[in-house]
Image 1 (tube, rainbow over the protein chains, first blue to last red):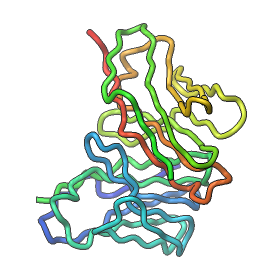
Image 2 (cartoon, rainbow over the protein chains, first blue to last red):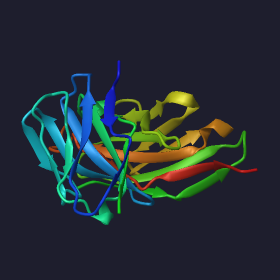
Image 3 (cartoon, rainbow over the protein chains, first blue to last red):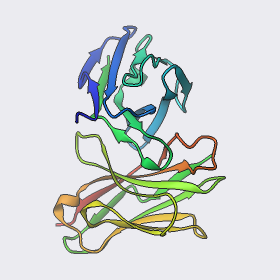
Image 4 (tube, rainbow over the protein chains, first blue to last red):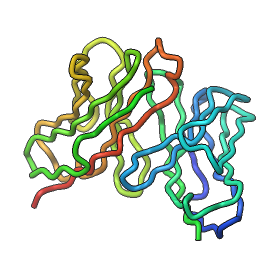
Length: 112
Length: 117
């Protein structure tokens, strides 16, 4: 069982470039979320989805876009990268409510 | 709205000593509460959770936590620290089953646990 798979693990972007962070889960979880982790800030919710075709904004959505065309995949798009988006990004999935989320291993993104 | 406060961004303990990591939360509805651990350069791993029922919950690696509604707390403890426990620990809250946003986790800022030489 692969769990939650994130690609790539590392990425360097130039300011203004766009890219997509990939996230896939094989546990048939309905709930999926994207978080960013910055030193001293904990994890902050960017976008989330409660099922295929349904997405919504979290705490820090500006500059990011998501879609959920299948249960398995939940890609995160950076529209025009900025240095402030340098961070570690985590994708997570869950059956919901009390089950807790399963996290991927993260993507470390640097924007120069 | 919900929030989590972890008291102490860094805790240092000697091997064999008690580990106590503090977490206080606020939630407008009965919460679900979680502790996660993150080892260097890895993702987050669920240590334990409280949803309903017994307020003392046991998790992996000898950790446990007690939900105290009157104190809005969910402190994490381990009777005897081991050097392999060095990691960052995150407390998180979501609205319980009666909440409208029970799929969203709100995290504290984390507590780094290190070994005292």
